[in-house]
Image 1 (cartoon, helix red, strand yellow):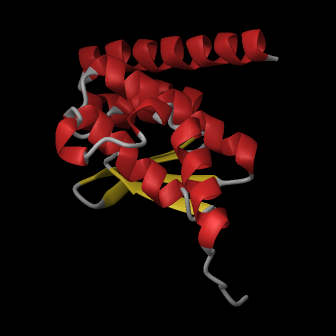
Image 2: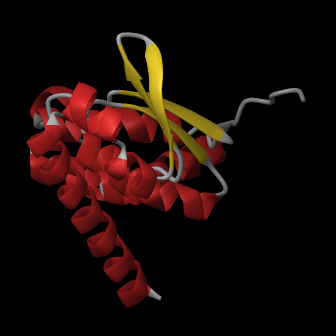
Length: 159
């Protein structure tokens, strides 16, 4: 139960490992001010990842990211699961949430209106009406499914 901080070479190894997982090897020597907003967000996630926690809490990591950057982030978050880590994700980007999470709680004004798998959330009339809007819900659900399928295809290619 005690935490012994990493030292010396172990710190460097953890940083290199986290940057690699987040696809940031090419910016390891860059100053954050020299990076795009999206890359700075990924560096922030890598920074938390370098501690090798069992659980990583991410509060709106996709805020301010465009669709492509959000998809990249989603791929990296799925990778965490291959490293014995759990992710607690809070985000408004339903495409990201639906593509990454195995189980989802949806809140509306602080109250849980739905809980379930991505498939169950996609079908929830409460979520569609309150959170996504009927049409937006269909679009976001399709986007989440597309992102999940792309990630699975990429994983199959890498295997």
